[in-house]
Length: 413
Image (cartoon, rainbow, N blue to C red):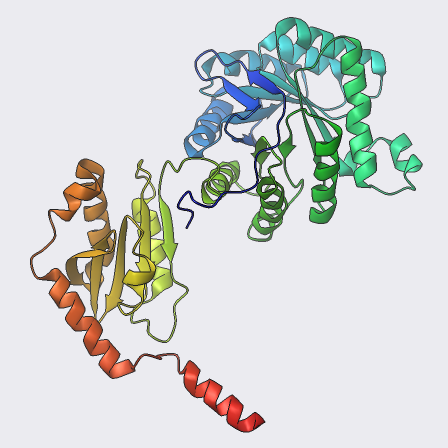
């Protein structure tokens, strides 16, 4: 657990841009908190359906939401969505420069352009000039799967980090010709090593803020693993100013994962539940997976930055999770409930999750110090007796590790 004494590398110094939402502006780069993004999967012309998803994404931790702008109906939808959105809206534009101009007219807070799709330099300059005049930033979204054919040929008919960085620089040069510099850049690829190297090179080549992501990561759990591997590696190096998980899943999962990644790395303050649980072992006297899942479901809606631990045994559990705000460990068909390592109650096994919910509410209302004043008399003594009894029965090596080591040495001796 990150207690604040250990941090990732110092953040890369960048320029700063602002997505100017009237009540909830988001600053990207220049030391601002790393923001979380996701994208709606609804038809943008479906205003109410899209807004419902935007609100769900914002509730799950998205600071910025992207919507496609692929036709006139979508652009018209944006005109209704933008003023009602709780977070900045980015218009995703592909090969039609007129859609970018229409999105600007609709009032979007940012554009995303793919250099591999809009080919004509005059169209790119026109979009940049309009964005400049309206104070709307643009993300240059290079994608390994849609690299401009000329760059693809020039780099040996392969998608390389160098080709992706060059694509971003070509687009950036068009922007600079019209005096536009409110830019963030991404160089996404579905290959994690390629994506990491491309961003490292881009970070050396420019001081614009960077949007991180592994494109087309796929469905969870593999998609989560790939995206986390790429983004976490770069964030640990101080690279990255805004992130998006690109999952084949409900986009709410993207927003939630993004928030959890930043919180886990100590890059954003925790806002909600952080549930930790042991992987189980020979000591476990309860189905840890079931209890952890039930606790997650019961506590997910708590809007307080609370860390809750579910531990399979009372021998090692309370010590291993002593820094958790709240936790429970199982032993002798009972649950030992502890607050910051101090046992406050002993409850029947089938009441463990209910007890966690009750004490989470106590902490929410009265804080940690207040909760500790409600500790049940004798609970600590009961817990100590259970622990001593289990140690007596199971010994100090419930997984028989030392016996195995002795046997291995004997066989090899």
